[in-house]
Length: 448
Image 1 (spheres, one colour):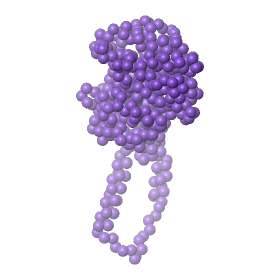
Image 2: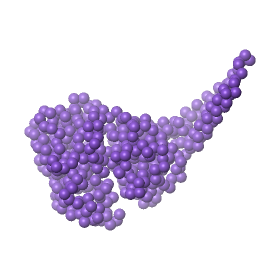
Image 3: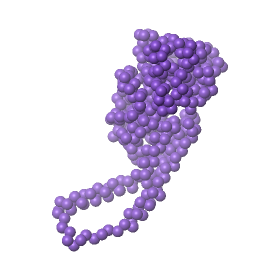
Image 4: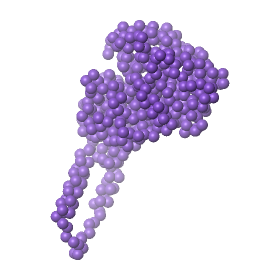
C-alpha cells in the first residue's frame, strides 16, 4: 500500500464548460399555432421551474474546502476517493483534500489533537468514543442514524447513547481457513486453539504453513494477540479479567498465555518461515499458492484477493477458536471505515452533507465491496464474494468489541505491536513481554 495517497478533487473546469454551453444555447420561439397552455399546465410548469431553482440554489450553497484524513488501505481509500470525486462533480463549489496516512495515522492524529488542529472530517479507526469523542460533533440527529446496524451500536455509542461517527463498514476478526486443505487433511474447522494446533501439526507433515503472518508490519502480530485475547481473557466467564483490566487490579501474569501462544506457534514451526520479514502485500499471493491453512485476522478481503489470483485457492471465514469446547466462539469486531466531524470545523454544514452522501446505500455498498467487509448500515446488499456465505452462516455469532479498544488504555496498541514483533523474532521472552505490558498499562492508565 502506498504510504501516502492524496487526491485534490477540483472539478470546476468541467462545470464551467457545462455552464458555458448552457449560456450559448438559444431558445426557439413557439409557433403561432401552438395551443394555449391550461392553467394547471402553467402551474405545473411554474412548480418545476421553482423546484429547479431551489435545487440550483441548494447546490450553490455547498461551497468550501474540506480536509478529510483516514488510515484506510488502498482498496478502501480508492472506493471513498471515487465517491468524493462524484460528490464534487455534483457540487462544483466544493474542494476536498482526501489523504490516507497508513501506519503513521495514529501518531499524526495524536499530534493534531495536542495542537487542537484536526481535519474537518477524519476516520476514527476504532476510537470514536474513547479517544476522539471530545473532539467530535454528536451525530444522532442525522437522517442515516436510524439505519446503523443495531448489533453494531455498542461499538460506537457512549454511555449516554451518543454516536460520533458515520460507520460505513465493520471489522469482523476471526479465522480464515483453507477449505480444500482441511478437507484433504480430513479435519473440521477448529473450534478450539488445541484443535487448530493439531491441524497445524498435520499440515506441517505435508509441508503446509499452519498460520501465515506478515510480521514486517508489526500490526500483524499485534492483531493476532488482540483477536486471541477475546477467548483467552474476555470470554473467561470463570474469571473477572475484564473488570480487573478496567479498574486497574489485573494480574498481568494472566497475559502470559497469550504471549506464549505466539511463541508456541513460532517454535512449533507452524508459522511461515519468513514470518518476521514478510510484507503484507505478499499475503494474498502466498495464500493463492494454496499451501496456507490459517490466518488469524480481521482482513477478510484477503479471501477475495486470493481467489482472484487463483480460483482454486478456496478459503472461508470462521469465529475465533475458543480455549475449550465449553467456551462460546466469537468474532472480534469494531468500527473500520468510520468518519466523524471535528466539532470546531468552520464547515459544519458541508461536512454533514458529505457524511449524508457517504451514507447513501449505493456508496456504502461500494466501500464494502472494495474493502470486502460487512456493512454497518442496514439495507445494503454488498457483493462480498464467497465470504458472504460465511457472514450469513455465522450471522448469530457474537461480535465482541475489539479487545484493546475496550479494556486497555489508549496507547497500548503500540505496546502490543512492540511485544508481538519481539516475541516472534525471539528478541523478548514471555516474562519480559508481560512486564512490558504491565509497565505501559500502568503508565498509560495514569496518563489517560
